[in-house]
Every structure is written in structure tokens, then in C-alpha cells.
Amino acid sequence: MASESTPFCVSGAGGGKGGAAAKPHGHVVLSGRVHDALVFAAGAAAAVLLLLGTASFLSPTPVPNLVALRSPAVSVSSAASHGLAPGRTFYDDPDLSYAVGRRRLTGWDAKRAQWLRLHYPRGLNASGEAAERVVMVSGSQSAPCKGAGGDNLLLRFLKNKLDYCRLHGVELFYNTALLHKEMKAYWAKIPNVRATMLAHPEAEWIWWLDADAVLTDMDFSLQLHRYKDHNLILYGWDREVYDARSWLGLNAGVFLIRNCQWSLDFMDAWARLGPASPEYAHWGKLIGEALNVKADNGSDDQAALVYLLLKNRKKWGAKTYLHNDYYFQGYWAEIVDQLDDIAARYLAAERRAPGAVALRRRHSEGEHARYAAARNAAVKRSVPGPAGGGQTGWRRPFVTHFTGCQPCGGKPNEIYSKETCADGMRRALTFADDQVLRAYGFRHEGPLSDDVRPLPFGYPAARH
Image 1 (cartoon, rainbow, N blue to C red):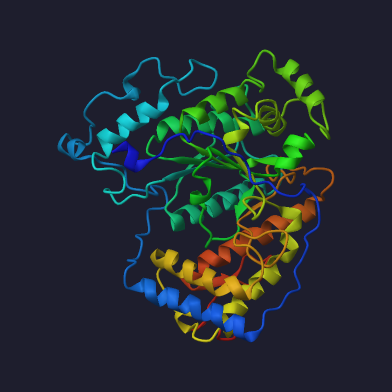
Image 2: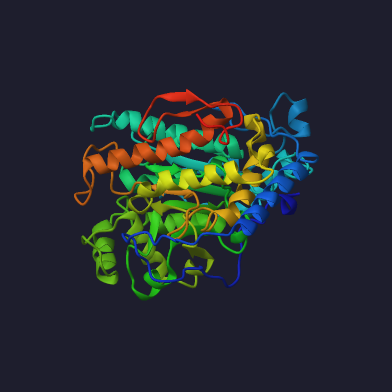
């Protein structure tokens, strides 16, 4: 039943969890705290118990095909009719439009519910699928990059997203087509996300990541349980958005949005502030006047998003969750110089922990979830900082976002050098790739090396 599969839009009062004021370009505050051997051993022992305990009831997750990351949904009736679903759905409405700015789509929650009843008559849980399915959406231009090496970097960014999705059972829609000719560059996310909502009614969440965002903790899973009362999830600060009225109070390059009517209405409202609107110049002026620290007098996607929340907090802000307690998306300049030390601390946790032989055991990639949970338990007390990383501590950052580097454009923001951006991107991509290659028995020779070497038995306890 639909109620079993998805909660659809959430309603009622709510709000973000933004805390202290934002420091978009600040320095990392590093913790020098060192835990004693007793606490360290306790954390390691808990990790081993978790790994061994879950082995009896968690079967290995199948490794999906790289392109078809999930098997298609097949209902009992559709199987009997060679894959053609019975009954009429919203797809049969000739007036349905996937495009932004056309006819407003109404009744989406009921239409999703009907579709789910037809395709999952016993509910998503009965089909073996998670109740809250996620589709990741990203993309880049169809034309070749202007900058040297840009196409290679985009390929590596794409591989990084494919790796994460394969390990976590997330579908990926990576698009290179411009779905609205007026909504280019950073505005292109809106038509992509909206079309994905309609193309994937089985998905509860749509997860947008800019092309230049790197998933740098392959063990970390989305904390969906934290967002049960919200429809839009962003990295940001309540105080910076609502009090300081800063366009840097959040980052629009990575967000989760629930697949529901509220979200469709929000995307339509967001799009109306963009270049497809005949009043684009007017909105740019209003947004520039309303927000502080706006570099230019125009409406970009991020400034427009802040403006929407600021001007209608009851309608949009109440269901928007702004948080910064971990790197839901982290500013790359705060992160990349710490990655070598972070990797060393993780290896030390596995190397020195009493009884961690089970954690270091070779295993199939399909068992990633079990070993990731055990590894997270091992580092929880021995490596300071929040899970998903943050401005304090030494945990892996969940997402490292290379905002301003413009890998495809060939010319980064003037405050960065091309070499700094290029080295940072290679470090982050290699850091993430080593986590993936471990299941295949290899790792990179160094943080800036494309060469790899085989891992010895017992790694990382065995020296090499």
C-alpha cells in the first residue's frame, strides 16, 4: 500500500537545525584530542562485535550492474502481461508535462500513491526494496570541456558517483542534455530534478549533486531518518539565511528533496526566479536588494533559493532543513590538505585495534554495508569528529564540493589558482577511489598518483 511505501509530503511546523554563524571560507579547526588506550580498545571491540554479530543475519547485498543500478519494478499483473502495467496512471494524461514552466502538476501525492499500488501491490517493503528509495541526479554539458583535462576530470567525478551508488543501492541519473534552453549552468538542476520526480515515482528522495562534488566517504549513508519532518535538505545556517540574509548562508550545489507535491510547487517557485522568466531582470534586482554580501545584482540559483526561504519562511522554510553538523557538502579548501592525515588515522584504527583481524578480512564488494558499519564503529571512539566529517576532528568528509574550481570551464574563480584546484580534485578523487579499490585488492601509489599497487594479505596491519 502507498502508506506503507512512502510518507509523501510532510506537513506541520518545522525548521532547520542551523547553529552557529556560517564560515563559508574559514579555516578548519582541528582537534588535538587523543583518546586513551582503554577507550580505543572499547571502540575497536564494539566494531568487531558488530561485524561478527551482523554476519549471521545480514546476507551480502548483490552488486548491481554499473549502468542498471537497480532491477526494474515488476508487479504481479505486469509480469503476466509481459511487463505492461495494468490500469491508467498519470502517465496516460496527455496534458502531463515534464518541463519547467508549463502546466502546473497538481495532485501529485495521490497520483504517486496510485502508481505505487499498481506496481507494488504488497508495498515496497514486500518487494524487498527500501521504503525510502533515493535517486541521485547530476550532469554536465554535452559539449567538450574548454579547459585542458576537463573531460577527464568530469569522467572521474562521474565514476566517483557511480561507485557510491553501486555500494549503497542508489540509482543515478546523469544527464548531459539541456532540458530547458534558457536554464543553463547552475539553473539546469531545476528541470533535471523536476523531470526525475516524474520519471521515478517509486523514489521518495531526489538527491542533486553538482558535477564537481566528490563523495569522499564511501562508508557513510544518507541519514534519512533525521529528515522525516522535512522536504528539502541543505547544508547551511539558519542564522545566516534568516538573520544575516546572506546568499552564502547555504549551498545549493548539493541537496535532497522529497518527491511530493510540496517539492514540485517549490521547484516551480524557484524556477520563476530564473532566466526562463520574462521578469528575470526584475527578480535579480529584488534579490540583490534583499540579500547582503551579494557580489552582483543578479538572480543566481543560490541567491534565489535564499530569497525564497527568507520571504516565505512559513511556506517554504518550515519544511526546509538547514544543517552543518557534518559535511553534507564540505568546502574543498577546508578539506583537501587534511585528507592524508584522515586516511592515516583510519588505517591506524584498523591496524592497532585489538581483535580487528575480522575487520581487516578480505571480503566481496557486495558485503560493503556490513564492513562499513563495523569500520564506522571502530573509528567512532578512536578518531575524533562527527560521522560524515566536519570542521573539527578527523572523520572522513561525506561530500567534498569543489565550488569555484570550474573543472570543465578551464578557469577557476580568481581567488584560487588552477594548480591548487587541480591538485585538490585529484587528492579527493584518489582518496575516495582507494576506498573502492580496496575490495579489488589495490590502492594508489600516492595521493596524486594514477598508478596502483596490490595490497598485501592482512592490510593494513601488514607493512608494504
